[in-house]
Amino acid sequence: MKKAIILLVILNIILVGILIYVDNTKENGSSADPVSKEENDFTKYDGYIESKLDRYKDYYKKNSNNDITMEETIKLVNNDVDKLEGLEYKNYLVKLIDSKYYISDNLLRYVDYYDNKSKNIDEVITNVNSNIDYEFYTHTQKADLKKGNLILVNKFYYLDKNYEPEDLVPIDSAYTMGGGYLTEDTWKAFKEMADVAYKEGIDLYSVSPYRSYNTQDGLYERYAARDGYEEADTYSARPGYSEHQTGLAVDINSTDDSFAYTEEAKWLKKNAYKYGFILRYPEGKEYITGYQFEPWHFRYVGKDVAKKIYDEDLTFEEYYAYYVN
Ligand SMILES: [Zn+2]
Image: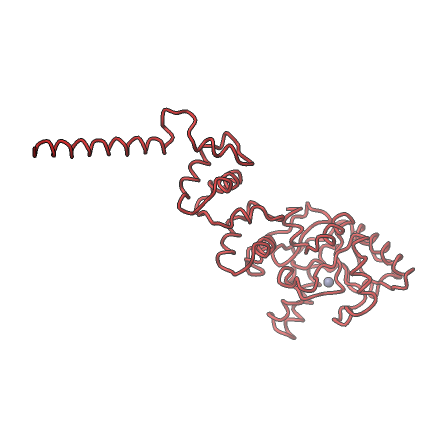
């Protein structure tokens, strides 16, 4: 009797062992059945790509205790999230990827920013695309001159000391106080805009167009001597970092804050895009542009781009990251 019980126990142990073994081989996909239940499931979802099935399975299994869905798995693997080392699954990853201005190269930075700042997904995308997750004047790189009228110069992108636009032309004296130069495209567009405005009773003229590196250097140092460097940084660019050095930017009529309340400023805000200009440092976007609201500073980008920036209410930083870079 005793022997029989021991035999039964042994048989039981063997049986349980076999059951566990069979179960494991199923999970590993090496079961004899060529079409497993899981495979069938993945095919049902949008975006399924047959060649990625093994990756779906791996990622899904790896994150099975994170409540990941098969739909999410497909989306994330299709966007190569499973290949990013050091990136753990997060339940907001799909939301990031589905955002209008999502840039795949920025994914790790989005996640880092989201996890450390209490910002919503849209803010995370906007801020990281505009490098706001970095301190101004850090991670700096040379401006890409090949971008032509869409060169970005800001607190992350700079121009060399000796950079001077090739096609500077003098501004006709009827359109300026103090003279100066703009690139040819910028000048033509400015003249076209000023001529139309004039017919509508709006008098527009340049008060500060192209500035050389040395001119900006002198200006910045003067402001810094007066207000200190920290304060000067909020309203004046460091040499090499001024958009005025591109010849594509122009300060119009007055650089006094009160200009915002004039008919000229209101007209510009509403109409400048039609001539290829954007209000470069808008109110409420200071944290992106790095500059206080400047109702007088306009940047030439061409008509199509200006319209898109105007319609989508973007800063040039956001536009550049998503559409140009
Ligand atoms: Zn300016």
